[in-house]
Amino acid sequence: MKEVTDLKSSKPHYEILDGLRGVAAILVVIFHVFEVHSHGDFTKLIINHAYLAVDFFFLLSGFVLAYAYDDRWGTMSLKDFFKRRIVRLQPMIIAGMLIGAILFYFQDSPGMGWGGIHDVPLWKMLLVMLIGFTVIPVGRGLDIRGWSEMHPLNGPAWSLFFEYIANIAYALVLRKTSKIVLSILTILAAGITIHYALTNPAGNIIGGWTIDDPTQLRIGFTRLTFPFLAGLLLARIGKLRYTKNAFLSASLLLIVFLSVPHLGGDNNIWNRLFECFCIIILFPFVIWLGAGGKVQGKKAAGVCKFLGDISYPVYITHYPIAYVYMAWVTNNKLSLAQSWPYFLLTVIVSIAVAYLTMKCYDIPIRNWLRKKVL
Image (tube, rainbow, N blue to C red; front, side, top):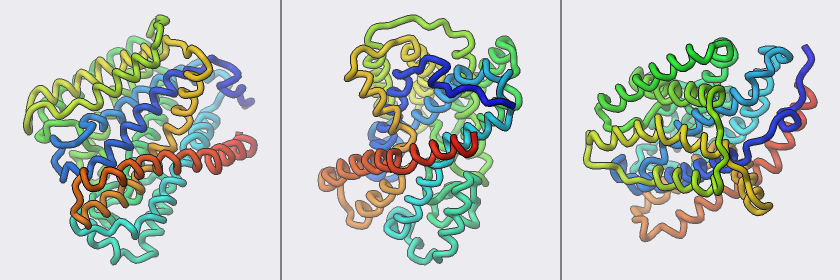
């Protein structure tokens, strides 16, 4: 089947949504680097609700997939679709695992629960890396870190596992569903999200990164389902309205709401309701606002492009660098007041590594793959 033209030449590009994805990704980096200073207490996390950026990414993914591919199935096969998604996602997944492998033995930290890292044989670490290249999760038998992550070398890759599941569901089923059916599914998914948020023992919706824990799997699928379906639905029925300063307004909304402290103590109802509000109301509104806006001026366009370009690379490569910072802080028993210059350095290095990886590896590899595979 003949391949269609590239998206950039066939449809207008949502520059503001690219920028918003970058804003959310940088907040995730800051959140993860701060994580060690909460000492395992989720209520004390700084930039407290930035973990909800993952739910925002799922919603944005649904919106962009529907916008980009819904009207292309007459000239595009399933094989074409999956090749495009693999070319888009897989190179940086491999890069993230490689960085995780290179930095793994610098992360030994008994205080973090990683005291056995120095005892992990090289062959086992390399095996986990090779499996990680495929995004296939590993269970407890290959948990070489001790945090029960499905991808111990690069924790955030768990969300890419669910992203692939969403892509498969879209290509096989959801692209064919009517707006009415999709609306019903989205409402049901919202109900499931609210039910979990109000009843789970943790008091928050954090989780999803463990493959052999039914509770963690439930969290992962719960966090995926409503946002992704809502993104599809928004792209199909949303009537966009032009708004001035949309990028600034939407960015501020993301920064403010993802930085809100934990509301109340453990098991507080207000924190649960706040998370539901962000996922079900705020994030769709932010995407609607961004999709309806226009970038004004070359500088604003350049900022949006830069943030959009680094958003995925920085998300999928930063955590191994954050692991090193966490281990160093814990091993030396440092407070944030003592380590803040290195905190800033870790954030800057994470962004720089992502940018260099994008420019020197991701873009050339994807261009080559497009010529060879597409």
